[in-house]
Image 1 (cartoon, rainbow, N blue to C red):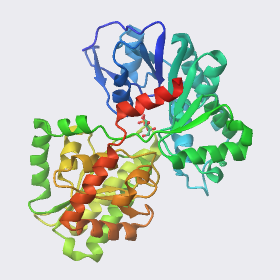
Image 2: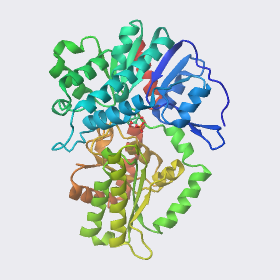
Image 3: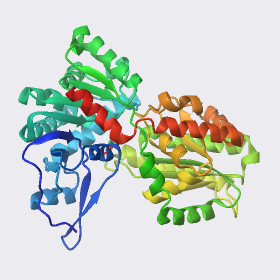
Image 4: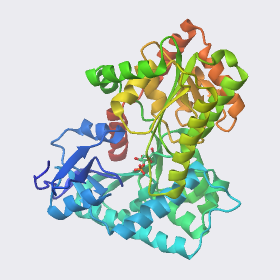
Length: 468
Ligand code: F6P
């Protein structure tokens, strides 16, 4: 339960801005509020600068609990939650960020019918501008002279440019956690919108990406659409966020994870191999083709029947959008179909869980013989880094060449084209039959590459580069 008033500093030396903040609130039936702190690279990265460092995290209220917390003046030290008008936020977040910008950078459109940039789109775009302006204003109001501001993601692409106008004294960085679209795909956007997005990011002193590939795609868009001089005032950075080894290894051996291992072992059955995937049910994660590849494996190599289980965790994401709800239903449908076609009394070919449970995810990581990470396109994909780090006996990694993590992990993975279902089935077979010695050798190398840039170093590197 929460009752403390917020203690945000009036002016901060280091500021972070993101749509989703490090804390969220739930409103209980008895009108009390529960606070829940989130995890992730940014949370542990920011902890690197210590609690006395005058930092401020500016984020948006997302649900009814968050809005109520803001209205009651409830909050956490170092966090400023903005109560942006609900309709404006919905247009900006669901309408533009998730339905347009996410689709462009992940190349998700079915182009014969979409996108359609009409009057509704223009209306939502105005909300996106206003939502970005609210962030820029809050950052301008709370930043000390010459402070460093680290703006996150496609939700806030206009903030660097807006903030630069309000506060030319600040050091402004922007980080894209997504891929960046190739020029021809980026050009699906109306010309003025494409230009506004690029100029928004170019308002930063440094604009950063997870891999060289996404950084190059961004610079190509800038030079093609704006000309060679456009990049003059902005440095481009690449910081490949790694997995948090200390945290994960310790957390993965706590009693709640051991309990989940026992339960999962029962569902899997003794002596069977496991193909593990853990994702948000996100369109870009390619869960359905992963299931189809597994079905193909059981079809074309019957020797695997009864011998392997696909442990697939697909946790809810963006359920306000119909296309996400439909995709979630399709994942469930295909998994059921495989279980009906091949399941026997003692063997469930696909063990699918859709309720988020971090301890159970870690349990699956530890049990993995094969990790399947086959996104259509992904900024990085930390799961590809985490499973090899945590797996008890060393796992083989089947990895999409379109994941950002491929740049660092490709050499020791079994590579797949995410659209090639037959190729993915072959890759699963190859991974399942990889000799033990080779599998553990590769897994050790994967774990080393996965931890090359831990979250705290990742954050400090950005900060140092921005302020030097
Ligand atoms: O994983 C890429 C990413 O852009 C993260 O940086 C960000 O937290 C997330 O996607 C946004 O997802 P959501 O819509 O669930 O907040």
